[in-house]
Image 1: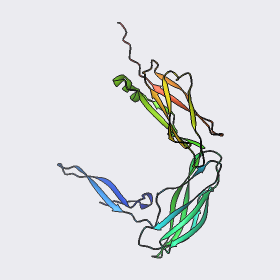
Image 2: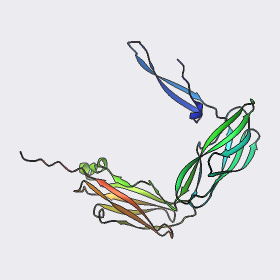
Image 3: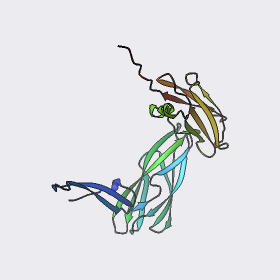
Image 4: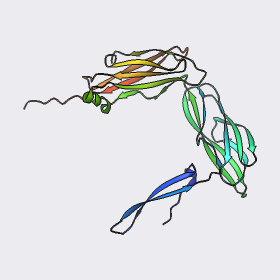
Length: 261
């Protein structure tokens, strides 16, 4: 039996793979084989995905460290971005053949978006082989005010069923933070439209004054409608992003009414 691993698709030094072996042994027709090993990278960086982050509309920039991940010394011949968004800046050799510092930047993006670009290194190792190495760079063009999670708030049937079981209120929350450390604001209010105003309650928790707030949404009573859906609007003191709206939904499985024969 031969097992092959494509090291180009696997990152990280410690690798564990599981293989199921089938045989004609009537007592043990199949068993699981665990294969462990290490992959030495020509160049490594941590974290595995490089990330540039900043406000949408502004350029992004950052500095990243690379080091030789195997006994082979490395000579960096060229570094380039495959897309049009990345610009490769100065590369500084910290330790000959072993460690480097690389400056990269990305052009502005008008709208908030998370994009990915490839950074390609052409290198020559001390065994005389020239290689091409790829790294992913995440470009996080952030909104001035960011909600975590970004999705709409959903109280699904599996959640609301607990109200029937024990009557305990159900709470979910959204973290409201600035897109970067230059943004300062306060969350000053929360509005629920009339479709959900009677079903949900809200409260604001200060996590870090001027920087981070948590908005809690509480469901205390089981509703008589199968679905309750409406908008929640978070009000802030930010001069640009004064309001942020998300949908809030609740599912309530109604009891089946028996009909007389």
